[in-house]
Image 1 (tube, rainbow, N blue to C red):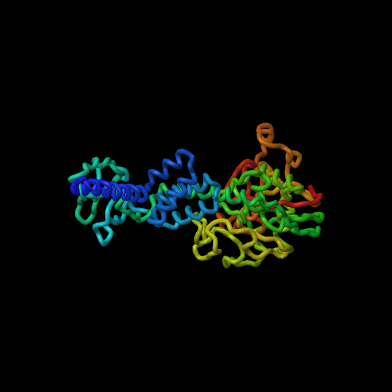
Image 2 (image 1 turned 90 degrees about the vertical axis):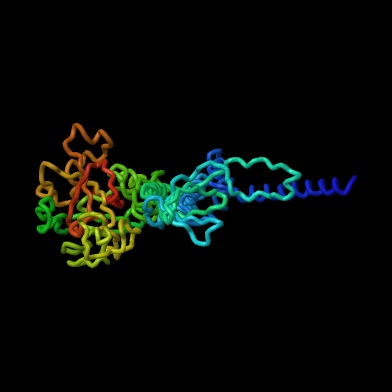
Length: 443
């Protein structure tokens, strides 16, 4: 065998070895979002998790990758991990248009650009091919590969860049995307709560019986006339019902402001009643609630006459509603973990603010119940209807409103008054309404 033939054979083997190494290298570096999405669509979630994880090491601030990995973590029931990824997205600023920074091999500084298309399939004309010994081997032409199409702001040019050799950094997240992430995070948080398998518990505070003046001359007409009420001893929950307990007992969490130690919200009167029954308890009567809220005080608020933001969670300067007080801050944008504020004189927390609380009583629409109320252990109008449910509560009866008390994070200071009364349809689910349970033989 001649030296020339040996040289050719050696060259062929060398090139095949080099090309083989290049293929492996290309395979290792060609991990793309498309591969991860394909694995996800096929139910190969662990594979997708690995792909997205590798990509995030290179582009840790890419919200598209963060979102994809969060969805993958959810499928793998890694809810705590998913929540952290979603938090990272929500911490990003809102994007203006599709502005990005483009990092390429040929540019030392990022290029300011607008992303036009994320998946243009064309041949990479500038890929580095191995031309060694090309006289001996004819390479197959490269196929189309994913490219970004962008508008370069500095030059005004529309250009494409191969994804394999380009990195983009988003300036923020689109508003529509952020809204979806907010909704997704709530569901993830609820899943996260359910995995903890918390057993529901309640701490009751014994309330000695006694008499007090119910209502107020300074409030709305439905708070009058001020009248004497006497109650037998009863017990009241020290805290509003936490979401983690509600979810454990009822199997779902209706809350809009999600958190295990936040009070359950967006709960109907019926659901509140049913929860208390499952716990061997009941809702307090309206008279019991006001007596407990006052804690032996006679003023408009159980802490005194002024509001500094340290007493209760109400619609303060961070509240988005028009009823907010722009001069006071309570430290919370919406609901707060139960017990975040000092207790009243009876040792009960959040009897003013945080979430309004359903009570047992119906609200009389066509008459003034306070003018007719019995002095001993009043139960409110139409107490015989307390066992009805759903459509059985309406239609034949003209009374459909239940009372809730205490004010909420989305209500003004006046709603924090101990005598303040509000009512809503018994099936209403509002993010500012929750409840606490009571015990005793009064009803």
